[in-house]
Length: 201
Image (cartoon, rainbow, N blue to C red; front, side):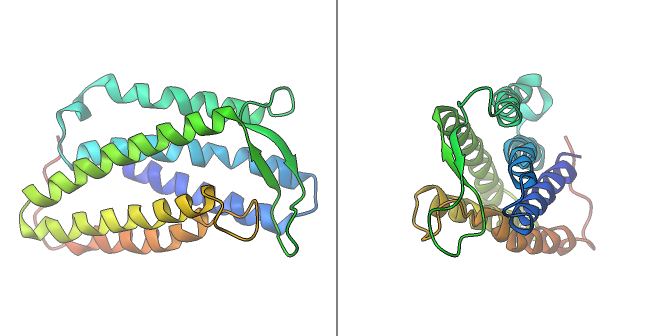
């Protein structure tokens, strides 16, 4: 279930990012940008739940993982109520670079709280999957490696975006990188289709 929710969050993030470009210049684009955070904030939560189950971590049996949703819930609330406060974004304005097709969301203090939280969850889940890669039989090693590569591509794209290494402020490479993630995940799911089912905790 957590893997299915992960895929749904990815689809929502990528889909709303595409709509934001298509609706550029319309007031609805701002609303789409706010709704995009339903996928952005929830994705790392669903992913760490999946990683804990897949890597057979004992924490997957506890309610501790529910705590990982607290900061994303606040983040989504701040995104949807932007205009009455400026914690997630201090401003939303037309792009300053010629040729840009997305609004420029100026990051506020809570953006960095959510960003740090996201990267902590990604780091922990990556560590669990690496441990599983080392521990598991070779039949599962290739599958785990595909999951790790699929995670690394959007992670790198997000670092490039947040670091400001792109010539167009406001452009986010992360949704586009999910195309590679999706291909990796599909390959990972069918890799062992003839093997015995993986034990589920």
